[in-house]
Image (cartoon, rainbow, N blue to C red; front, top):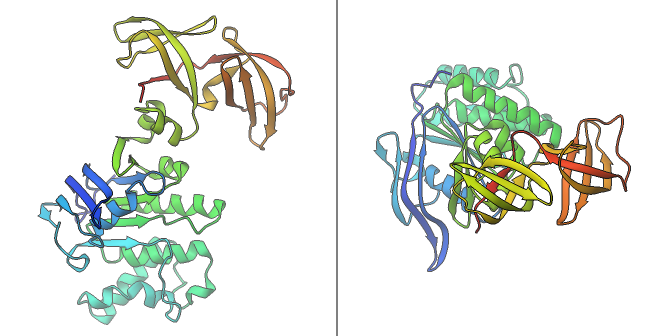
Length: 354
C-alpha cells in the first residue's frame, strides 16, 4: 500500500480531557497512529472515543498533554489551523447546493481557481464512484450516496488526517457493508491516515489496520483486529470484540508458557498468559466451540435458531449456558439433544482476573 505524501502520523502524549470540574472524558491517553493506516477507536457510549477524535480535529481542546500531527504540536491550535478533514455522522450536506457544489465547498476557501476547484471536485466524485452525479441535489441521492459525497468533500482537501465520526450509523445493514468497503478501498488506494470512530465491533474488525478499544475514558487494548479477537487482554475486551463465551475452568498445571485446563473431565492445553494454577476464566468464541467433539464436556441444546448461512445454538452445561454456531444448516440439532462439546485447535484463551 502506498502512503500519501501528505499523510501524517498522530501522537497523543499523556492526553487528558476534563469537562467542568470533575467529568473525566479522556484519562492520560498515550497513542501512536502511523501515517497511512486506518485506526479505529472502538468502545461503548461514554468511553471517550468521540472526545479523542474531536481533540485530533481541534473541536475540543486537551486539558493536559500534547497532540502532534506529523512533527507539529497542534495541542492548542484551533480546528481551522489543523490540516484535517472530518466526515460527520449526519453527512452535513447543504440541501440547496448540487453535489458538485457540496464537494467544492471547502476548496473554494483554499485559494484554488474556479477551474481547479471544479476539476478537483470532479476527481473526488470519481474516487467515490459518483461520476456523473455532479448536478444532482442531496435529496435526489440515497443515504449511501450522500455519505459518499461527504467523503468526497473531505478527500478533495487532501488532509494530513481524515476523521470519521460514526459514519455509517444512519445506513441500513446492506449499505453499511458496501460503504465501509468503499471507505477502506479509498483509504488503501490513496494511502491516507484515517481515524475512525464506531461502536460497531463488526465494522471495526472489517475496516481497521489497528483497533483502539476504549473503556472508562482510557485505553483497554490496542491491536490488529485478529490480535484483539484471538487474544483479548481481559474480560471486557473479550466480551466487547465480537461475542465470547466466558467459561469457568481450572488450571491444573503450568509448564513454561503452556497450561493444561480442566472443565469437568475434559482437558485442553493452551498458552498460560502468565496465569497461575487454580480457578480461572477462559474466553471461547462461538465458532470455536466444537459440538459433537470426540472429547469434551457434556451439554444440552436448549435453543436452535436457523439464520440462513448457519445454525445458532444455546447450550446448557453444568456450569452455565453457552452460545455456539455451526455451518451445517442441513442437519440441525433438535432442542433437547445431548452433545459433547470441545474446543477448536486454536481459539480459546485464558483471561486474567479483573
